[in-house]
Amino acid sequence: MMITASPITRQTVGRTFIVAISVLGVAALAQLGAVVWAFVIRSQMPPPFADASDVPPVLGSVRQGPAVPVDTAFTDPARSGVETLALGSPPKPTPLPARAPGLPEPEQSGRFKEMISQGKLLRDRGDMPTALTRFREAAAMDSRHPEPIFELAVTYEKMQLGDRAAEHWRRIFELGEAAGPFFTAAESRLREVKDAAMRAAITNATQPAMADAEEGIAPGKILGLEKIITEEQPERQSAKRLTLMIPIKVRTGQRIEVRDLTIQVLFYDMVDNQNLVQTTADVSSRFSTAPADWSDTQVETLEVSYRLPAPDPKASRGENRAYYGYLVRLYYKGELQSSAGEPDKLLQQFPPEAKLPAEADKAR
View 1 (cartoon, rainbow, N blue to C red):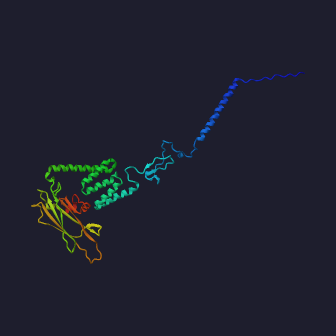
View 2 (view 1 turned 90 degrees about the horizontal axis):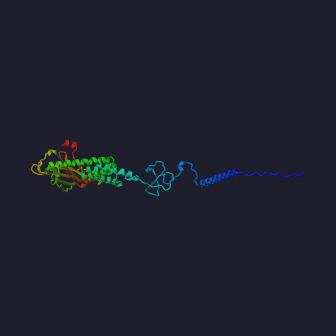
C-alpha cells in the first residue's frame, strides 16, 4: 500500500486582523506613557497636609488669620519698634507699625494720663505754673493729642491770659473733627471770644471816653492800681514788718460810689521753707487821707501794715514762718478792675476771679 502525504492547508492572516492588533498596541503604549507621566508629576509634588490651615499662602495672596489686637501682638525683642502677628509661617511677613499714628506709645499711655490728672489737681489747688508744666509734658508725649492742649487753654483762661488761651483753642480747632468733643468745645469757645470782641468793639465805639487808655487804668475799667511801694520797717520784736502804699486811681470824669468798692489785700508766708499759706501776722489798713471818696482827687492811697512777730526763743518746738509776698485785688460793683502781686509767681499761682462771688457781694 502506498502512503501518500496529505497536503496541510496554511491559513493566511487577514488585513482586518493586522489593523486591530496595531490599534491595540498603540492604545497600550499611550496608557503606559500616561502612567509614567503621572508618576513623574506625583514625585515632584509636596507631601499632603493634614489640615487645610497648614497650607502656606500662595505668593501674592492674603490668608485670613485670627484677629490679634496691635497692643497684644507678639514682639520680637531683636527688632525694636516692630511687631509681627502669629499667622502660621508665611515667608517674610510685612512688619506692622508699633502703634497707630497720633496715639501715645503703650508704655507712655499711663504716664500720659498721670500728667493730665496731676495737672488738673494742681490747677484746682491754684498752682497754675506747675499745672502748665504737667500739661506741657503730656503734650510733648503726643503733640497731636487734643486733651493736653484743651487743658492748657482752660488753665490760661483761669489765669486771665485770653490771648494764650485763644492760641490753644485755635490749635484744637485746626485738628478738625478728629479731635472729637475737644473740637466742639474749641469751636464754641472761639465763637464766644469772637462775639465778645464784637460786643467790646461796639461798646468802645459808643463809649469812647471809657474805652480810651489812661495810665494806670485798663480800657473799659473805671479804677486802676498805680505802682505799689513797699516800705520796710525793721523792728527787733518782729520777724518782718512792712507797709504797702497802694495808690488807687479813678478814671477822669468818673465818680465813685465808695460802698461799691472792694479792695482785697492778701499776705502769704512760707512755713518750714516748703508750704505756702496765708499769713497769721498782724495786718491793719487805713487811707492816707480821709475821707477817701475821690471827689477832689484822682488818686487815693491805701496804707496796709504787715507785722510778723519774732519766734519765741523759749518755745521748744514751733513752725518756721517767713514772709513770702502779697496780692492786691481791686473790685468795683463786683467786677475786677485791676490786680497786682509780688512776686509775680504768686499772682500767677492765685489769679483773681473776674467777678466777686455772690457771698462777697452780699457781705458788702
